Length: 142
Length: 265
Image (cartoon, rainbow over all chains, first blue to last red):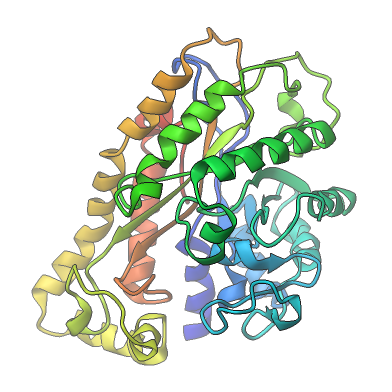
C-alpha cells in the first residue's frame, strides 16, 4: 500500500511543464500565452524514485495525463553521463566530478535515456521529453 | 548534440532542451566551470547557436532565478536574471530560424510554417521552491533550521518511520500542526504570485515587438516544498501540498498570462 501511494505521489511531486502553441500575443508579445498546457513529471529516478521497469509507473503517469518527462532532471543533470545512465553522486563522493569511472547508477536501478524513451508510448501518444543538457561535465557535442 | 540526436533518432518528441539545471546556484563543479554568469552566458551563446543550426525547431530554455526563493542567496543569484535578460536582448530578436507551431510538439521538424524571428532562447526555466514548516520530526519545524546530519535527512526523506511519525502528528493533539500544514500550499501560491515582477522585468527589457517575435515560454520544470533539509519526499503532507498547490497554479489563468503560461500539475 505504501508503495502504491509512493508511486501515485511521486508523479505529482515535481513538474515539467511547457505549453504547446501560441494562442495569442496580446501579452506585450514577450511571453507566450496559451490555453493548452502541457504538464508532466521531473523524473528524479536518480534519487531512488519509481522506475520505468515497473509498468505501473507509466500507467500512473498516463492516468494523470502527464505529457512531458524531464530527463535526467535535478542537480545530477550537471554530473550526468546520458550514454551510461550514471552520474557523479556528489553527496557521497565529491571528488568524482572529473572521474567518469567513479560515476554510479541511480539507487536501486539504472536510469537510461533509452528506458525513458521506450516508455513514452505507454504514457501517451503525445508524450515528449524535456532534456536537461549538461554544460558542466559534458561537452556540447556529447 | 549527440544527446539530442540520439533522442531524435529514437523517434521521441522533445518539448525543449534546457541549458543546464539551476546554473545560477553555482555550487561545486557548476561554479568551478562557470565562475560568473558572464562566463556561463558566453558559453551558452555557442551552445544555443549550435543547437539552432542543427535542430532549428527545438525550443531552447535557459535557467533563471525564482526570486522568491533563490534571489537573495548570494551575488550570483541576485544578479543572474538581469544578466540573462540583457544577454537575450543583446542577441536578438533575429531570424534564428522559423517555427511551425504544428511541429512544436516534436521540436525537430524542418519547419514549413511562417518564418518568425526568435530570441536566442525560447523560454525560461523557473524552479519554484518554498519552505513548508512541517516535518515528521517536531524538532525540525523551525523555519530557520538547516539540515545537519545524514540521519536527519533520512528522517525527512520519505522513510517509513518518517511517515509513521507524520501520521502520528496528524492524528494527535497538534491542532496547530494540521492547520499549518493545510495552509502551506496557499502560502506557497501566495509567494509565487508575489514574484510576478521578475517576469515583468524580462518583459520590460525585451520590449514589445508587435507580435513579430516569437514570445518566450516559461518552463516550470521543478516545483517543490522544502523541509529545511530538503524536500520531505513521499510523506502525507508532501502529497497534500503538491496536489493543492498544483491545482491553485493550474487554474490561475491570469498568472499564466503574465508569466508565459507557467503552470504545474
